[in-house]
Length: 178
Image (cartoon, rainbow, N blue to C red; front, side):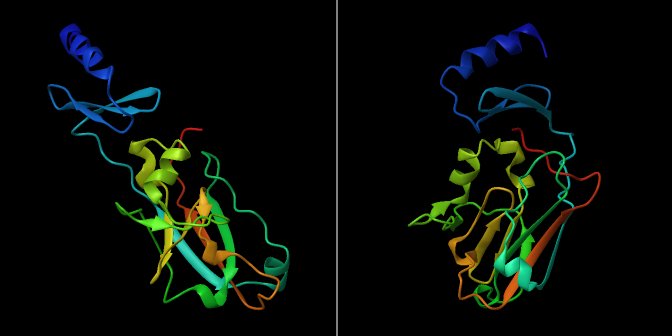
């Protein structure tokens, strides 16, 4: 990059929102991520997700004394969530979020876009595909490390549960800036 490229970039940043991508010359682009700029070249490899999902019958202890899920940090490599067995429709799967997708965060009266939840938790646009979503046939159950859907609430009447286990393969850990 030359000084003229930097000057043009600085001129354009004044009214640019987080999530914007500014194209530069020579295959370079700049991602605006809240208070940071991330430079990328078109030949840069995209990180692989490396996610696995396992589900099993929950133990009595997991149902009666649920532990909060681990947060999404650079050191975390696994998460677990226990939910009522009857709410899961079909086989749960793990994947990246989809544009326009909504869920009802635990304790919230209405639905919210996943993109809004990611932004509220200050996940930069370039890192949003690194946050796994566990979903079933009815939609998202869990935005791993960020929030769970109201459907996953364990009630005193819950007698049978399902524990969802998410692992990130070593070396492929997603990174989210705190």
